Amino acid sequence: MDILQREMSYESCLNGERIFARVFQPADSCRVKAILQIAHGMAEHSLLYVDFARQVASQGYVVAVNDHLGHGKSVSAGGSYGYFGDGGCRNLVCDMHKLNSIIRKDCPDVPCFLLGHSMGSFLARSYAAQYGAQLSGLILVGTCGNAGKAVYKAEKLLAEHILKKKGARGHDPIFAKLSTKKYNKAFPPCRTPNDWISRDTRQVDLYTNDPLCGFDLTVSGYRDIICLQEEINSRQGYKKIPDIPILIVSGDRDPVGGFGKGVRRFAEKMNKTGHRVKVVLYPGARHAILTETNSSEVYEEIMNFLSSAVEKK
Image (cartoon, rainbow, N blue to C red; front, side, top):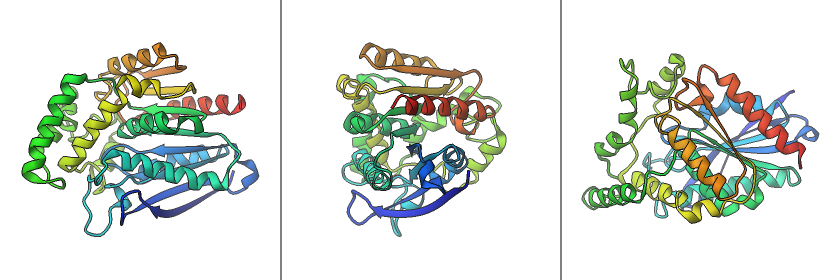
């Protein structure tokens, strides 16, 4: 199937900023089955999803993925990477909804699905709690469980303390130490700082050598993600997600998901609140399973989930 690819931009929810997005779709608009929107992870950007997006589009889907505020081509001249503005992650979710509204104008009568990876999975969970009635399914890739109220409280206090000293756009190495830098410890001997991402060394090198990947967020950016995790892991955060099909895919060697334990706990919580959840943990796979050595297996699982949900509509 012939695929059309286009780039676009639109006004962000944060005044004065514009959001960059990529859209992939079948050349024959009559063959469009559904929409898949993608929310990328922290310190990455939409370009990393082109291969996956093209494969999904070749099966009859319109696929849209934007660069979040503070990421990729959505950072304006003089802007700051890893800065989300006043409003924090609410701005990112709002920008995702704006993109969804734009894409739906061209395809108003087809089902819509949302896929989020890592930080994008947190955003997707928040999005589903607010706009889930407009979704036909949710796919969470490389997500995590609940760290607990005490952890969130301590991390927020630390962030607020440093924020007062360094400002919202300031940086402090302690946040990387508390998040991404600790993940490599499970994979000695480490060839790069990012071995935890994938077993595919080529993909790890592409990420490591990409100037738009792996940067440290601002102090306020880290604070905002802590607040987002606290929100989505609250009782209301679970309950507000409507009864739609949910697929969770992760590697059982993904440190973000607690090597499968955090993912299972999250799925159990969702099942207890009446949601229909399918969990697939891939043996040996690490964090970025869309670029793992078994990525074709992951693609197939996601396509089967989408096809099944579309057929039931």
